[in-house]
Image 1 (cartoon, helix red, strand yellow):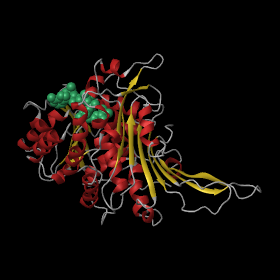
Image 2 (cartoon, rainbow, N blue to C red):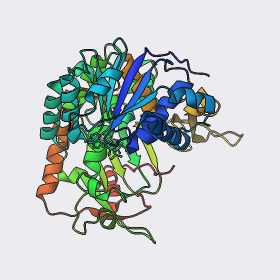
Image 3 (cartoon, rainbow, N blue to C red):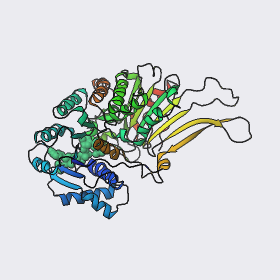
Image 4 (spheres, rainbow, N blue to C red):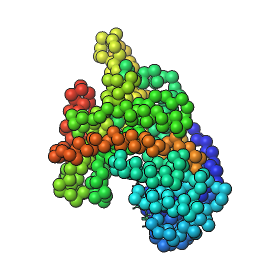
Length: 482
Ligand code: NAP
């Protein structure tokens, strides 16, 4: 199946922080992929901006190298040259006045204007204020802001207030790249475009839900940044919260940005506080010749968690009695992100040999985006009526294209949505604040205490304590495997 590509309108996209890691690894290669897919008009402009003083030609060579390294497709020289002809560069220090007039002269009236803030959040206010003050942004411009969106409720509110001085909520696109993943959107398609699941999508039929985001990498290289953040701020407040919302929300009346975000917000507001018995924090320790968390963070006294597991309850009619178990960590045994919905066992078994196991729907975000429905069937053969659980597997790369090249990276999709003016897959300001309002007390309680995170071996499945979180409910974590 070849996906249909609908070209977007003519646009000028300005990337602040264009010399940085995110721009090089994700944004620019993603734009190239959309270009070769035919989605970007040949008249569009992509303008890099950062303090580094360089001209268009030098920046284009950087983009060429970034596409070659991170493009994920064989670079086709004529196509790459055509893409590079859309690229320009203006040296700008966000905190100074130089360069803004030149940027203004490059941005064309009539095209869609998008400004991507791929810089530290401390610069968001400077850029927003100067874009407005120099008359570069107008009422139709869009701004894209990266995570982290604050480190607590207070700072998120302050950031929202700063942006609101110059831009309306309809102009602000807060990126959570998890929402751009094909599978995450498929979660909505599966729920709301089929009759099969939705009638069962409630506490009466769902035993529990597990959301896992496991990484094999540690924090080496960005340890001092991570040590001020930790797994709850880095993963739970944003990505995992968004996944939880999409699973738990009521059907929106329409697939419309505010209708979807209203329903997600209701879920966040219905989350019960998490008490100390329902949360386990961990910190990886060296295993073999690797380094420990405190070595990577260069902080021997660090109490920051590189792993967290928690039991979350949603106080509404639909989910009364169905726990959501969340876990995420660094240096775990495999890199995998998945959501597993375990249904209840049939109320009565008519079969003599073996009790039917609970059906399970597993939604894989990475690797190999796809879905897997585990159902009971009869074991093949003449040996009587024995039951066996088998997976009905759908890997999107196989289903949608021969080599998966048709499955766009999350950033590609989200940037195209910005140009299209579609905010459905972006977080609204009140959603972000509500997520911090729920997370803040969990973080505060920990920071006020003296306990240390549970140690776990690098390459393991996390701390033993996390196993007990489920054992005491007579449940088990799914195995972490790629
Ligand atoms: P980075 O590699 O440190 O790049 C920062 C960029 O900001 C550079 O291009 C830098 O260029 C520019 N910059 C710094 N000070 C500036 C100033 N005063 N005026 C104008 N430009 C300035 O950071 P990054 O990893 O790309 O991250 C960018 C943002 O995305 C951050 O908010 C980060 O939290 C977020 N993010 C990153 C990732 C990722 O995978 N990297 C993932 C999620 C979110 P010059 O030095 O040339 O000015």
